Image 1 (tube, helix red, strand yellow):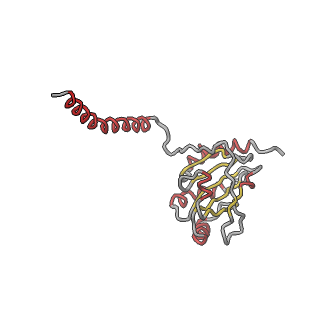
Image 2: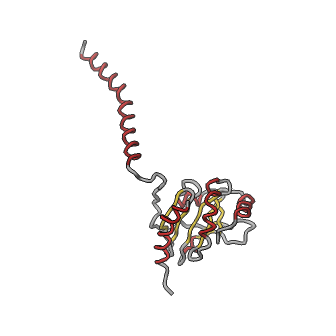
Image 3: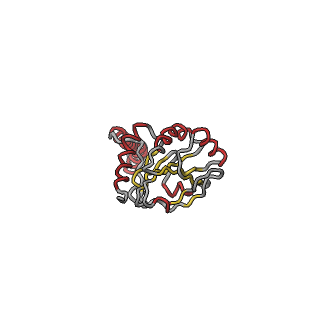
Length: 194
């Protein structure tokens, strides 16, 4: 076989082995992530420790509540829950939000995401309203600014206006007890005394 023929055979073998090598490399990465023990439900947020995005959303029509404005975060601990009436996991976590709303040490605010006002009001009428304020994000632009991946998501904003914690997906009693409330306690410790 000629030198050019050997090069052609090698090139063909390489072309056949290249997809296999890529598949094996990706499989190894996937397996390492799977075996790492990291909680795949945790989605890091680039906003943790940074000021909450500038937000000025109108109130939900037909409700006697203010809209959602980032200026209102100053000097308070605020839980901002991103929800929609069309979201089944939002319905699942709603009783837990109702329980959280009984704790008057912090504000529970809602960011109503891409929802029809009548559907949002019906949702709250059926399940109760845990929110002290509800801002309507009809276009979804504010949710993008907050780094929302999907609903529900919840952000804890400290009295300094910075995001302290982010929870992706519906809360469970365990996630509230083990993750959220320790962060709430830390944020409450930063409130001005007096």
